[in-house]
Length: 399
Image (cartoon, rainbow, N blue to C red; front, side):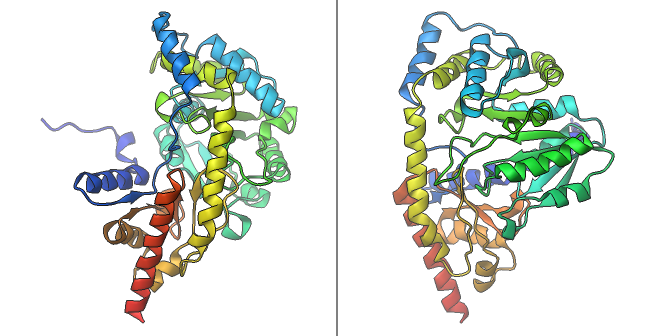
């Protein structure tokens, strides 16, 4: 029997990131020497004290259901983290623990959006933002962050697209895929527009601990009490503590929204994984030295490979300020190599140069590719050498 699928899933766009990663894995399984730069997760193992704490929690019998919104102990640890890192006060009732930050976003849009409500999404954007908005019956409204403005949107751009049905705007700082940060002044100006038009700010801060050089992460919620009241913060331990597979994220903000999210979670996931929650308590209560060790390693890799990447003909890359991605504009390189699109160029890099990168079209920016430096320095340097040789050989053949 052939079943008819729901219209809501028919409209979904498959994840470009997962598709490229799957293709690279398939080639590797065939014995092909592929270097994958599509990873959206740290290449470090979860710190030992977190693993030990989670193991001990199981031995102590903590293997049953928890409250749908998460362990009170974990909520308290998260609240303490907000207080110490950003100087923001949140009550436990203003925090929900979820099965990853992605689930926090999904649940938020489900409780927030009615059919036709608009959510402003700056591009480049993380691939799941528009799909989650569509699943909730909302309408993604894209605003281009210009390359000459470090891929960030301006208050003027935000004002221009607001309509009576605009419900929220997403701010992702540091950004996936660009690695760029919004300054305090930029956030304040964007926030003022949101206050004037009563638009909820969804502040995705999952990469907050991975910031480089003299740059500093600022949460829009820490700027003023008025902006805090207008903001839902999305965060988690996946990137900061290399706990991607543990699936622990959280949201913090307006109590009525958090309560609605908790009610919805009680009918979907019941609760985030108990053992993982105990691990997350240790992540925030224990030493932060592994976090800094990982951050320094990423910064070192970035500083070593950045100039090498920009030395490739036709590549133009702004230096990331955070996260662990390089996002070069390769429109000129694609043309020099004889390809009519960056997607075709990225496909050729995988099939011929044996380097897997993510085409920017999946992030709403068709002239770029995303490369993750969450892999060893040796592999990074080898991958960039392969890309450089590939591009140069194509140029030589076309000249």
